[in-house]
Image (tube, rainbow, N blue to C red; front, side, top):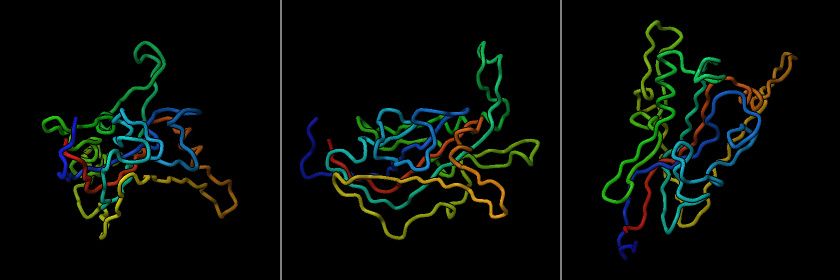
Length: 215
């Protein structure tokens, strides 16, 4: 489809990539946590549960982006194992809190106008953008909402970071060993993440203004 010369569209749209989104102990594969992982650079488009970047490491065509916020979404929550689930060994959601949290964490949306997607992303980024929040362990009737309803809790940069045409995009995620000054053994955070038996997710976002061609 040909673009309209001299006319550009500006939209509010975040871009995201996923460090890990998985349940159970992980030993290999792309969802394995690592001491250092570079997000966005090797993003694989096509799976909205992992990323919405249109091409690995950069925006397509002559798009530009003004980054007004950098966000991270992190969630760890237990999922029970059951040998009766679907006729074999597996995982099952057992509580109201687990169902609500993993429904939010496993859902995406697309806002389409005419033939173009104007806004898309994980459900947890709307409206509050803070991921599942509420009271679980200290409440007989857990209350889980989609993000803490407090806009000042989300940091916004006073000046935007500009990403111009064809510039590379990277988010370098690092994880460090937790030292124990009392002399006990240090905790390897990466190993702890990969050995966690429940569900877990870590996503990185850049949020701001996307400018693109009008087709």
